[in-house]
Image (cartoon, rainbow, N blue to C red; front, side, top):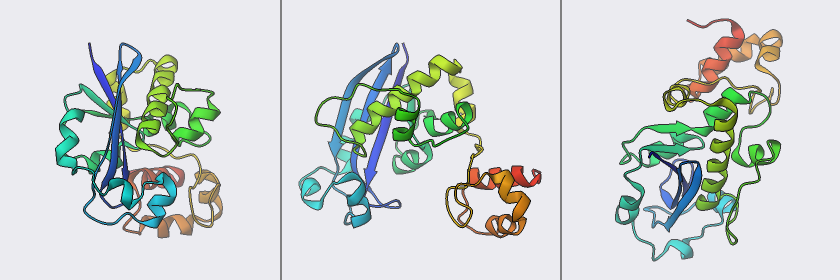
Length: 222
């Protein structure tokens, strides 16, 4: 029987190290085996990160390093994360196949938001979450992501191979997530400001998904 391990990390900053790691397993359609650990990072926690996950320096001062706890998270058949590219980069020691529920949600439900809390309410998923857990903490987010995956499986009935293919391919975004055209569809932006897209594609930090969507909207796929 396959074990899908839903994993989440909280970090010192977007680029920084892990301060909390958690997982839940999905086995035969049931969510089980919750696991979580604080991790002592190698750099200070940014105030921006604290404002999101509310993990302070005092909370992790006596925590073990990641190497001391990572073994309990290894050994699953498939790993799952919401924005798997982020967690996969933070956890290079996990060598198993990954599935990204963020990319799956964009494929199945292209319109609207795709954050796990947005999907929880927009799709009326209502996951079971134990008392004492809070949004933007790793274990809480694992429960929500696991419930989202189970809902998508009921609707889409994708195979593991299909989910991995979606995960490993660029995904189309519905609306521009930032900048002067935030909230507009990419097709509308292409019609009124193609120069902005040409400028955007010249930037070095454009994500694969954003570049793919812009090229699609401009009719410039190669």
